[in-house]
Length: 190
Image (cartoon, rainbow, N blue to C red):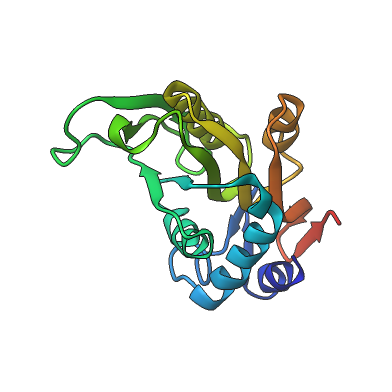
């Protein structure tokens, strides 16, 4: 998606350790107009799949998922990283390792919100090593729901997650696929 690639080139900042900071428009301060264009693209890619639930992970994917859910006219579920008093009853859980934070945590979704009749589209801001997507897909599987695919804003294609999960049969549609990056330079796969 040219609009997103242009924004990454203009406002993204590459840091040491394969970190791309896009917090001025994607995952801290959010450009909702950009999210709207991204949501339309995700809809174009997945409209034939009869999506009735969007699933994301706390916290950076929530904004994109919400705008996308408006276009699909369906609810958003976000997997929580900690169990709170607000989550009562039975839950699905999966372990996820955060590339950014370097920690492993449990993600949690209440069973009442996800079941066998659901056709789920996962939406997230980044795909690097694939841990978040793997954990979310595991929750969809536990629920007996159908995973139609994953819509990713930015994929670091030089890291193994995308190829690994595609090799396992997961449909992944990334709006910007980064081939390589270094301070001051980002190269995309088209």
